[in-house]
Amino acid sequence: MILNVINAEYKEGYKVFLTFDNGESVLVDLERIIFEDKRMIFRPLRDVRYFKSFKVRLNTITWDNEADFAPEFLLELGKQQQSMMMDEPISHGG
Image (cartoon, rainbow, N blue to C red):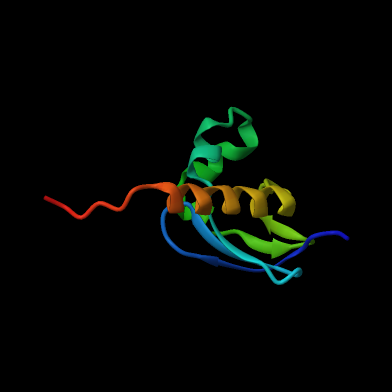
């Protein structure tokens, strides 16, 4: 079965909340990917104003310069980031 992004909502920074047609939803932070990937197509996405201009097209989020990420990659990355957050110790201050 092909995975499709059916909704994408910008949150903050380089974070997007994605809903997939398999019923799963994740918050994915693309900042590290965008800044570490040396391919020219991702350079414009470093400007957060441009980053926010994504659209759901075909089966994923895309930008006017044709940059995109595979929906399977987005779902897996979001799950990894979520599990990493759950593994971090909770700081109680002081």
